[in-house]
Structures are given as structure tokens and as C-alpha cells.
Image 1: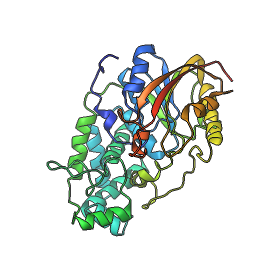
Image 2: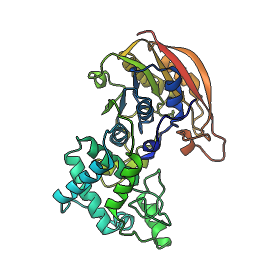
Image 3: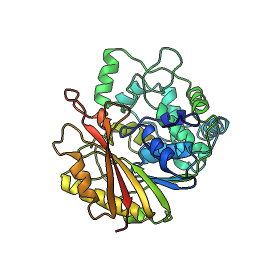
Image 4: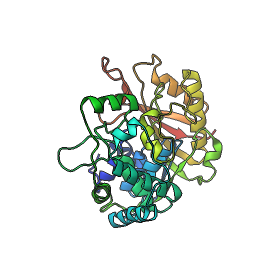
Length: 367
């Protein structure tokens, strides 16, 4: 694979629990796609496929049922600049001088300095009221990426008390940890963090074409506004048994309009109660996305398994493709989850080696 044609820092604007390396969609599209061909990802997650398309100058469509995923992916397609992003943040803070609601309780007292939490609540209210402009969508993505993370020894990069970068800290454990280590939240410069991140991520980006929408990819109605012209589908559905990616995003979910506490409901997600039901629901996704593809379109699926489920992943995926209108052309090893940023790496039992993952290439013949 050749070198990236531009700076790719924007792909790291916000970590996400289920993700794959940029090299995967970039390598496929760089080698095989032609200019102007549309790319889609029905499980877009943090928008890696959409961002690879942007880097290569290809138009793309993304879909996800998670509002956090949609917000991150929209930020990766935003055509804006650091000055416009910072201006949007200042405008919101000027209009929303006092937030109408500030979460309370031990967690919030220890997670954020009171001045920081107030500023975040003001920005949250402004973005919930209006996030139509691309500068505001970029701002929302920046804040989601800085909402929680480690406390650096030099300039602060995150708004929170000491936290993991990927996972939202669970309240009971986090409060005990902060109290035990006497880690007090600091009054960080919210606009300063936004400014530095805006300059890092949105300087010199290539113009993007496409859009990201919130929808259940199993539902045919979610595709009604997509033209039937998709040539490439590059995706990685949640691996069978992977069910914690909603609660692990709970703080980011709060910022985009969710409740100020952890939710464990999995509404709108592919069911994991049995391999058969899981495969059946994936089949609906493959049919739906196929129906907006051109004849001969190709879909490349990265898929693997997790160690706490005995079911083998390739038979599940094969079952989902039977009768879907997609025919398997080839199956290639993608290595294991220990290589790069992979879904299973974050959930596998560390006592066992991660399973091998595969890239499954398919072609659309119609249902």
C-alpha cells in the first residue's frame, strides 16, 4: 500500500470501542476503487471507512444506530477550519451563559472541576439545540474526544480527572479510585483545549463529499434516502458476543443527549442471543445495503471472534451471507486483534491469545 496522500490526524479525533485501523479501508480503496465511486459503511462506528474515502477523494455514506458513532463520523466529514470551530464554541458560550441543567452527585463532583462541567453543559445545550453547521459538528467531535482521558504532565488535553481514553469511567469505581489517590479535578482551559485540537485535526484537510446518518441498518426504511449507486461497501459489524460498547460510551452518550448515568440497554443493536439470530439479522443488513448498490459492487467485511464465545466467526458470517445477494469471492487473513486497533483487542480475555480475524470479499449479484 502506498503512503497516505495527506495528514491523517483527524482519524484520531475520538477513540471508539469498536474500531479498525485506517489501513484496512484505505488499502482496499487505494488499490481497487476508481475516482467518483461511492463508498458505504452500514456499521460506520467512528467513521474510519468514511475518513479513508475522504483521504482518497471518494464520496461516502455512513450509517450507525449509535448517536455517538454518528457524531464522531460526521466530524470526520466536516469541511471547516480551526477558526470557524473556535468561533462556534465562543458563540455557544456567549448565548448559553448559564446551563439549564448540570448533573449532580459524587461522580460529577470528582470527574470535572465545577467551572469545566458548567462550560461543558453550556456547550452541550448549544449543540443539542443546533448542530447543523459543519463547524458545530466538528466542535462536537472535538469535545467528545476530549471528554475524558489521562492527565498529561504538560499541557492538559482532556477535560476530566484521570481516566482511560477509550472507556467512559464507571461512576462507583472511578470515584473510589479518585478518592483513594486524592486526584482532584483541575480547572482546565476548555477553549484552549478546543483550540489546540481544532488546529491539530482540521488544518489542511481535503474536502469531503458524503454524509453520515443515524439509522438501524437492519431496517430497509433507513436506506430510503440513499441513491442506488454504491460501488464499495467496507465494514466491520460488531463481533458476535460483543455487547459492552454502549455502556462503555456512556459519558459521550450523555453529551449527545443521553442521561447522566450509565445505561446498559442494547435497543437498536444486532442481537447476540444466539449465533443463528445474529446471522439472520446481519443478513438483513447485507440485503438492505445491496439494494442501494450497483450490479457487481463489492463488499469487504472484516470479521472476527471474541474469546468468551465458543462460536467460530467465519461460519456465522457465511450463514449471514447465504441468500443475501452477496457471493463470497475470497477470504483473507487479517491477522489477530493484537495488531493495530481492533474490536476484539478491547474485550478479549488477556489470558488467551486474540483470535485470527479475516477480510471476506464479496460481490453483489442481487437478491
